[in-house]
Amino acid sequence: MSAKRLLFVDDDRMVLAGLRRALHEMRESWEMEFASSGQEALDMLAASRFDAVVTDMRMPGMDGAELLERVKDRSPEVIRIVLSGQSEKDAMLRSIAPAHQYLAKPCDLRELKLRLTQAFASRDLVHNPAIAAAVAHLRSIPSLPVIYNELKTALRSELTSLVQIEEIVARDVGMATKILQLANSAFIEVRGRVHSLRQAVSLIGIDNVRTLTLSIHIFSHFDRNSAIASEVASLWEHSAQVASLAQRITMLESGSKTMAEESFAAGLLHDVGKVILLSERRGEYVEIRKRLEAGAAVEDVEIELLGCSHAQLGGYLMSIWGLPTSLVQAVACHHRPSQAFESEFSALTAVHCADALVNTAGEGDEKTAMDMAYLEKLGLAGRTDAWKELLAQAQKAK
Image (cartoon, rainbow, N blue to C red; front, side, top):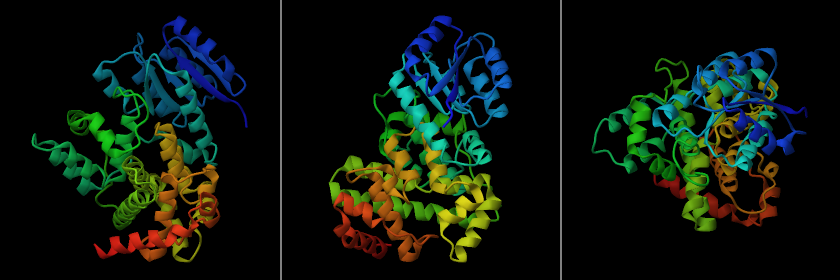
């Protein structure tokens, strides 16, 4: 695998020198260049290919938000990160659209390396440069119009609570993904990573959600006249069923509410790669659906037509948006959990099994089986009947 090329941008040359020294150990994996202005960075990007741009926000002439907006338009495949000590809210809001991640100075460079390494590893699985660029160019995952409008209506009322906002967001893949992206950035000041929607909504707060939705317009929605509107609704329904069952399985196996909330979020996001295809590559999405109806296996068809699976696409988006590794793995490996090399029950386990059970019950567009070798390794092969009972109870309660 060739070395990744990174461009660091900051008008303070001492900061650049410090980054050069601190990241010296990565020189065998990363080829690093340094620019002291936005225009210099654009000139370097025009002359050579880069995999990622990491920029300061406040710079004279062209600030970080404007630089990344131009990078997004000219080189959409490039991973874009703001690394800034500027804490003004308006500056952060301006960076939301063009940046994949916003990290605060002083940054834990181990965290920066982890996030970039994860993003590069995920992108290397997407063997289609055009699709990888389309994913990196995404500003948001489109939402269902009815849920999008419901959220806007709720936010216009001063009586709406955080619990109500969470309930709305939890029904929409696009909103949930964006909220988790923001919660795992310097948009909020929090130590550690955010794994659940409840925690994400609580940390961001209702006033920020209101500003982001009604003024900044961080969410978008599918065209109401889409010829495949029914596909959108069925995809959301499937994701909600998998999320609910994954949460129930986790509570049964671990008793941990924290892990159960993480499993719910992972279940809701597990098919986000399909949402990407639905919004960005509709022709290929329709062709994949036709072949599935003829009995083909979903991953075989996707890899043949796209060079990657929807799981890999989703994992790539989750990684460049800075979501925690456990959520990235649950999305990227939900069909093939053994690829994650886990040794104990996790959100991935719950989502893999929930997805397989829902699909086998005829409520999904795939017919997938649980990976019994993986479950044997975790000592869980004998638990499948109990999980089937959870699904049966949920179906009866409908």
